[in-house]
Length: 230
Image (tube, rainbow, N blue to C red; front, side, top):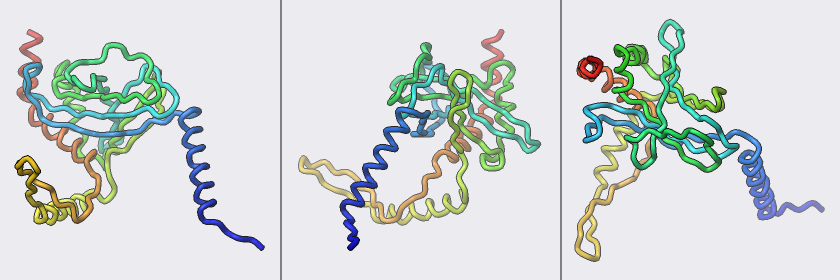
């Protein structure tokens, strides 16, 4: 008579899943998007500027001459792609000069800066102004290896407005459950209350902030670019 052993079935499914992941990592291109970050910055290395950082990890076959572009379309359907510089993970003001093999397990950071877009008469900023809405413009991160497209990540989220409204509500509710905790050494710190979950809409929000900040900075960036050119 047939009998079903749930433990054996669970172990079999787990073994098949592990085997599939091992096959995918050793025989296929597999790139994972880790973080989309950005901010307005001013430092000793650079004047006021905005930036957008994209952090990816290679989990599959090695890539060569890896590069990333921010791809989008305008309202007339024309395609645009803004190339991003690869920078060091710890010191992101330093550009990576050796863009050789992007091996399995490696993490890479690629940055798009307003100061770069402002060069050559601000043509890059004029392109960025056409990115009016990430969803309508189908904004994506495209990963290339030796000029071949190997991965794509959508930066807009479905039901973004609903999710953002929910997140604002969740923030207010969770903040009401914040409490102070006193450690053994007498230090008092704030322990955030997390009662309700949030949606991850960070990538679209970061992109919208980058576009807004870059466009608002464009007059001063144009003056700096003209001053350097002269």
